[in-house]
Length: 75
Image 1 (cartoon, rainbow, N blue to C red):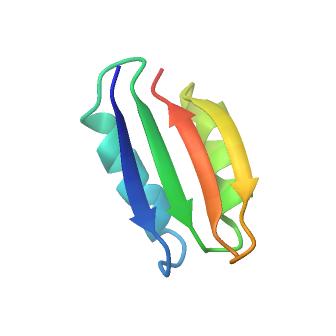
Image 2: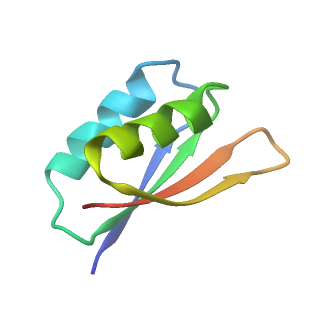
């Protein structure tokens, strides 16, 4: 199983979601992606995205520097 890291810090909505969606489309089932984002709406956006698409949001961590770290498993 593979994992990639997408550093999307500094990007505003909808770019973090669009880039993550594009990366997931190229991944195999069960693969994981770690997303680093600073957009304040990212936690809610990614939770809704995963619920809607069937991908699994494994973790969400808010770092001290204002970066959200999200780990998503491809459905």
